[in-house]
Image (cartoon, rainbow, N blue to C red; front, side, top):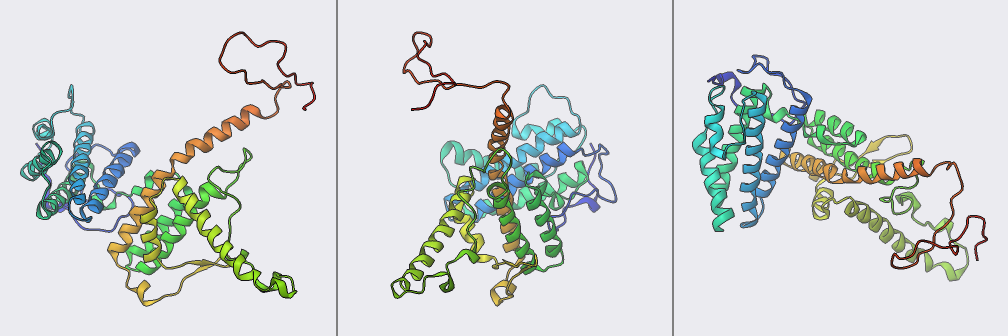
Length: 369
């Protein structure tokens, strides 16, 4: 079995694009795009575990399941990548023996503890302590960094989960935001994330197609500039109390439309509330520029804030991607119904199925009543 050289031990980096290690891994099998995508998915599950581990006691126990699932996914991918012939997937700890002829997996003892704690939680209802969750997180982090470098030749932190998204403008803005995070400019990076999230909603809400308006649109977008102004109001005395009421209605309608678009796409609203509170307000202008005020709270943003927000947008994009299928159905129906080769009549509902339709069916040539 091959071992990983010291130069391939885990290193801490910001998330960037996947890149090959300069000194080369112990296994020379090329990493194909599907493998990169699966690694990104594994990293996403692992990051979910990180977020769960920060939740209050009892709820944080879910982190063990995510850490275990991510590890098991990685082990299965290692078997495939190293082309190890197995008739069926081994038990969790059996992977160490299965893979050993080609690679010596590290930290079996740490992974055994993770498995034991997960079994105790799942089958016995024994909740892990905060210390055990932190031990599991550290063990999984070290395991992933080492295996990713030695087997796949990539830095685990460089695996970009953005590759999982299907919204092009959101992907572009996430990549641009990352360039600012890489140099430590987290206020500018967070502003990029704000624009990326707005682009995510726009992808489904404002981009109408020949097939018709998106079901996730909920009316024409209500902008700040649409707020009623005094110059738009009648000049009679009876209308002076109308403006404040119209402003309230505008405010409620704009907030309600935004909330409907978010929730209809399956995006977690409390997480969005956190994202909005921690992020700078970015305003767009007619010249195409976007600006935000560099307040002390904005300058205080940290790498942890940025990493959480980035993960939130990626998770939101993955949840929203279910709408792609619905938009596709809309397009297919439009293509089928466009320019029919013959006129189509109407059919009347007749209750339970029984005798075949009779002469009373409505003809296309009959007049509507």
